[in-house]
Image 1 (spheres, rainbow, N blue to C red):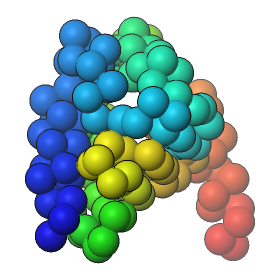
Image 2: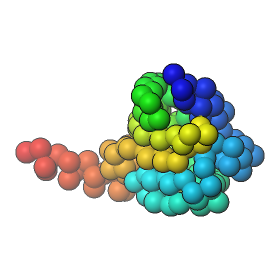
Image 3: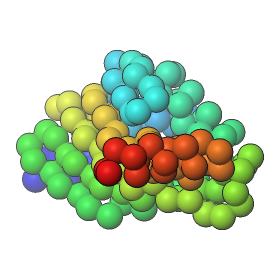
Length: 143
């Protein structure tokens, strides 16, 4: 497959991501790459670097575990677990389950990175006060 090595490079990068390596995104992304997740929508490597640098400020010991990889032509789909500890709340390790859609250019650089995960279920429900409210609203919607 044409982009198999490119996808493996991305997987290895994210599974070994550190504050220092987050500044090396230009080796993975095209100059004008777009990145979108439930909280951000940015273009360009400097903006993407800021998102990953900010992640290390907000949480302790963040790491990604890629659980599934699917590659077709110039597109890939990953499922992953994002493991971390919240600095301001519970010291227990938290886990967000998510998925990423990637698109590669002819040179093998990522031009599109779109993350999909449920912020309400995977994050807000785990926060002390907000979590109680979210669980209450969820139960009310099911009744």
